[in-house]
Length: 147
Image 1 (spheres, rainbow, N blue to C red):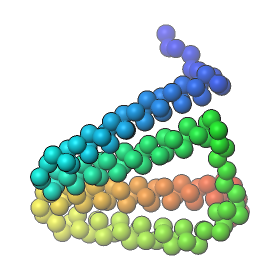
Image 2: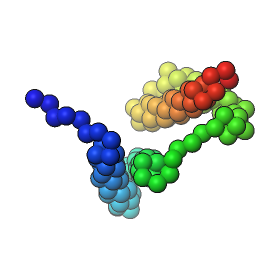
Image 3: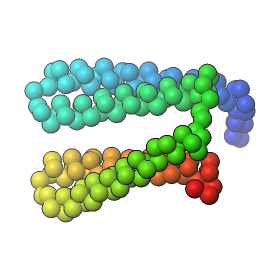
């Protein structure tokens, strides 16, 4: 027998509670990666830990944004707000897609294992950026269907 899903305020409270727990783990990750960076003399280990630390900082910010949007601040996005920057967003979409091309080309060219793994990381991140921008494009279509 499955447990019934929480509804309304109970669900919101559960989401906020879980996000706060996740934030605690992100904070622990930030502290732990900082410790590893401080103790390691290896530049590759330091680089990877710094990447993870930076990502955890951003995760914490996104989680806080979500908490705030559920507890204190409504998320808004108007066609005018998006229109003010849309030309710049489109330029950035083109830039991200170029960088994906660089990553794909370098993935074919590079043979060193460390380079291949670092390129895979970079390519994944560039694809993530492209996805975020595509989501922004989707928001634009939803708030202004004739845009």
